Image (cartoon, rainbow, N blue to C red; front, side, top):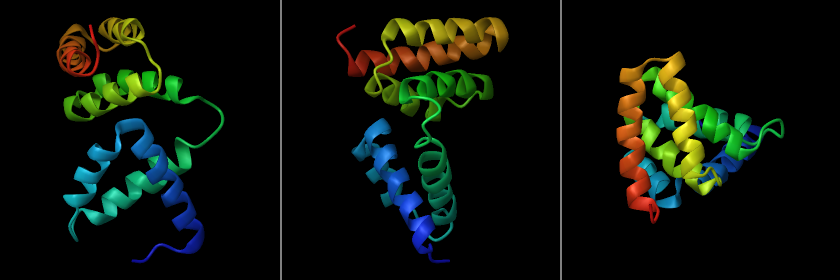
Length: 131
């Protein structure tokens, strides 16, 4: 189903934000892996998550990143968490702030989920910073 003009603007804005937050290479890999079956979900994520929500003025990218780290920990989604740890660093979230968000999740989500997120985040942080 082709995207109409208004939705195209939202999609394009979403693609821009998505590339800025998680990186153009990450997005290019996701797009390259898209086929007829996965195209609808990639379009949905880009248009609605990145285009309709991440572009809203109510929260900054730093805050959205920190919220995502907590939610992805709660949901137990390590692959998405890794992408969003990279995005959080890009959005100016400090390593100390990432640590605090994940400690907070240990209390409210559970220690096993937080431990897994600490492992994922440590790997990403080690690859992307001088820590």
